[in-house]
Length: 187
Image (cartoon, rainbow, N blue to C red; front, side):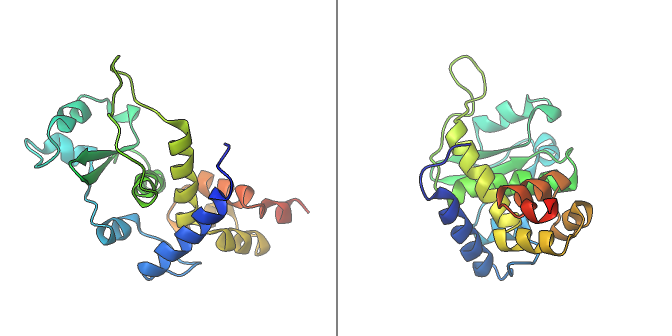
């Protein structure tokens, strides 16, 4: 992952600002559904979408999403006009769902522009720079750098930290390592 200069520091500050806006402290668990409500971004699961005959505003996106095999998708932001909604895969583990929804919310917080879900060949439209930015901000929202360092200093197990933060063990491990806090565990 290569980011533009200063992005990581900006993302860490943005994450702390957003957590403060929704009344979540640095060391507390962030519920992405509460954040979505705060941002006025509707969230629905693939199961809810599959059960729906008509989803107002989602138009053609419903047909595309209903045709996707459940294991082939984590989450997606669907745009309709200047509005957006998030559809996520409820077949994933709860911790993974938290990461998926937070990733999509990060696209909104970073003001990433809309893009067609599929390219001219019918393949997924993918911008690696935009996705890397959303991944990084999602991690910072779920486990701020200060919290990652706290986990490492207390030598808290990744399993317990995942339970405490409501995310996956992989997310905890990545945040501890990407923030540099993992060096405390090596010594």
